[in-house]
Image (cartoon, rainbow, N blue to C red; front, top):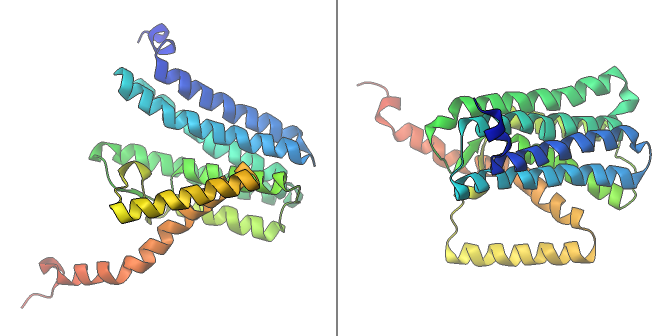
Amino acid sequence: MNMVKQFLNPPNWFSAASLFCGFYAMLLAGTAGTDHTVYYQAGLMIIFAGVFDMLDGRVARMTGTASQFGVELDSLIDIVSFGVAPATLLYFWALKPLGMGGVFIASAFMLCGAFRLARFNCTADKGASRFSTGLTITAAGGTVASVIMWFAGAELPAPRVAVVVAFVLCLAFLMVSSIPFRGLKMLKLSPPMLAGFVVMVGACLAIAARYDISTLFVIFGLGHVVSGPLEALVSYPRRRRQRKSRPEDRDAP
């Protein structure tokens, strides 16, 4: 394989930028101490990594330079920028007082993210879907970053360790769960829903302008995290009726 060609492939530049942001976030987290500004910057680096991660695939499609190498590179970088980097940030921000217990909790987030990526890689060839199985590692890592940014921007200390542990384990569970989450790429809105979505985005932007951009990130991040379990709970009766109505699910006469 011609590695020079891969280095010169434009989509891989955006993937590399995502990796750099994730790595820099870890360096910042390790030196933050009690400095809220540094934690804010570290979280912002993970958000930037997410932006570059979204752009690499779009650039590949626009330029017709998509390749299997790029797909594998993107997956490897995702575990660093949205698995290892958020786990490191969580540890130094709130979990360090737990000692090795904090290491294991942060590692649980990282490991579940790796399992989520592996599952996606095994099923990615089955075609596009309106839903993703489990919370994506990008969304989980971005939510961690946005929450830490919000606390740091408000110059608030981290919540109680028990709250942070519950938050981390919840995200870890959602990544490896079978709960369906809507993918924004496949989201199709009717005109009334689109109008409501535009109003909601406008309100969020107004909040962000009044307070801090991290407020907007938190709203979208936590909103997406909650949307999967909530929609699964609301649609459960309908899905149960559908299963009962299938001929193969009925008892044989």
